[in-house]
Length: 197
Image 1 (tube, rainbow, N blue to C red):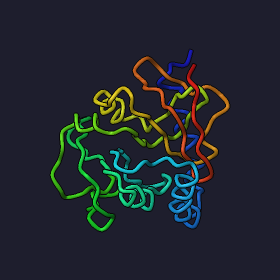
Image 2: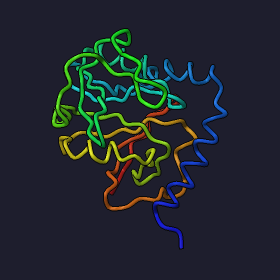
Image 3: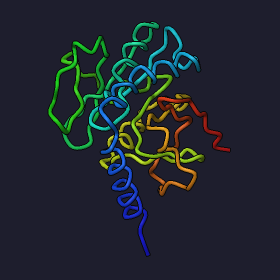
Image 4: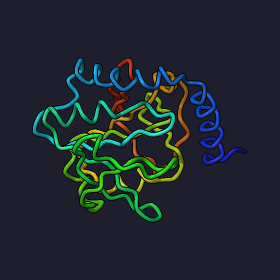
């Protein structure tokens, strides 16, 4: 019988294979599309703090979205990856301030590193996903960064996954008790709130 871990691994492989076929043009276009959906759905409130990842590889581009959030104005926390599963944060102050950390790590600000507990100030947390289902289960890359980081969230914060439209699954996503359910899904085409009741 397959374990949850092996089911997740197989699903990741399938999704990443499909992502490898996304054209460069589609990836670039996703940046402004994400902003357009956020505006239409009024996702970012002024004078709030949000947390959002800096996209890399085959992920939906968050560059324009980060800039849009900052201009609302909102305070924007972005991850700072440490050793092991340590994830600190820094305030985002523009794409030009991000430093490339190599092919397998997202770009990061060079500013002060805030502790993991800084996440408790965020009212909305945008996290990367490879897949989500209608019950709020999310498939990540498997490293466990966000499972660890989300322990520090404010329990009233909304958690919104960002992924490609076809990664919203009609079938249940394999999950276990350590996985934190999300409250909505943002794609370059739409925003879908999730009713977990």
